[in-house]
Structure formats: C-alpha cells, structure tokens
Amino acid sequence: MSDLATWTRRPTPGLVPLAGRLVRLEPLDVAVHGDGLFAAVGGDANAGLWEWMQVGPFAAREDLLCFLAARYAQEGWRTMVIRLHATGNVVGMCTYMRIREAHGSAEIGCVAFGPKLRRTPEATEALYLMAAHAFDLGYRRYEWKCNSANLASKRAAERFGFVFEGVFRNDMVSKGRSRDTVWYAMTDADWPGIASALEGWLAPSNFATEDGAQRRTLESFRRA
Image (tube, rainbow, N blue to C red):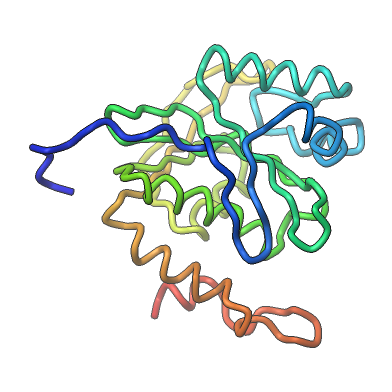
C-alpha cells in the first residue's frame, strides 16, 4: 500500500480462533489449554525447544503459564495455542508480539512446536494461518526475528517466504551469551505470492495418499 492518506489503525490480531484444514489455533485460555500446552512444550523432555529463545525452558506448568500471562499484561503478547484437527490435542503455540496497530506491523515469535508438530504440514499450516490473519486485518508488515546462531530458525523463515533484512549485532544478552539478532519480514505486497505458494503446497493433492510424503517442495511452488 503506497497511498496512506486514508490509513487507519488496524485491529489487534490473535483475538479469534483460526481454523485450517489440519489445525485450529485458539487464543490462549489457561483454564482450557494450560495442561495440554505444558504437556506439549514444557517439562524436562521439551527443554530443547527453548535453547535459542530468551526464555525457558519451563520445568513447571505454573512457570510457563505465569510467564505468558506476564507478557500478555506487560507487552501485549497474543499467544495462539495450536490444536490438531484430527485429535483435538494441543501440540504447540506461537505468539503475535511487538504488535503496532497504528503502523500495521506485528511479529511472530515464541514459536514452540512440540514433537508431534515439528517438521509437519500441520506446522506449516499453523504459520500460514498466523500470517494470513495479520494480512487479512490489513497489516502492512509481518516480522520474524531469531538468534543468528539458530540455523533452524533462519531456514524456517526463508522457507516460509520471509525476506532477510539484516543483523543487529550485540543486540542483547541471552542466557549469559551475546546474541546477534537476525531480522526477517514480509510485507502486504509480498504476501499474495507467498500465500499462493503455501496454499499450493498445503493442498491435499500435494501429498501422497500412501505415506503422506510431499509431491512437490514449497520452494518449487514459489519458483512457479
């Protein structure tokens, strides 16, 4: 959007459920989701999920839930809990952060995918639903940031379609180490092409009926 003469503040994302074919994202409700969310991303078994994040791991249920409640109150985080349609089980979460409604900009962060969600079409659909919701609300910019040493997160951002924008050197001290932060983003002009590729990749016809293997890569859809 180049002409902003009629620009107005955008609604806050993350206030309503988001339903896809494989997953459903729901705004965090501790009474409804607390036990399932902790089972999916908390405890000693899931400590590795938090290696590159500024926070965690969370050994106790209340530690995780109190942390998310504090970020909601202090920074306006809107955490979405991810459920599998097939079972209804909670398998992870992701959060709208640094929400700037006046500018139409938001970040996706605190992405914690449990073992049943990582490297699956369901994970990609969850990220797709988050981005689509922001752009459907009229957002102009959607951000992804990660530790420069976190190769998996950088690959995920690039695979999904985020554009590398630069590195903030010595950005913060994280768990006793200096962190350089890599910035990625996509804009409302980028989104139609990214969305088309994601929708093509996520279509049932792109997965073999025998074993669920992808027929074409997401990158091949993007090139097309």
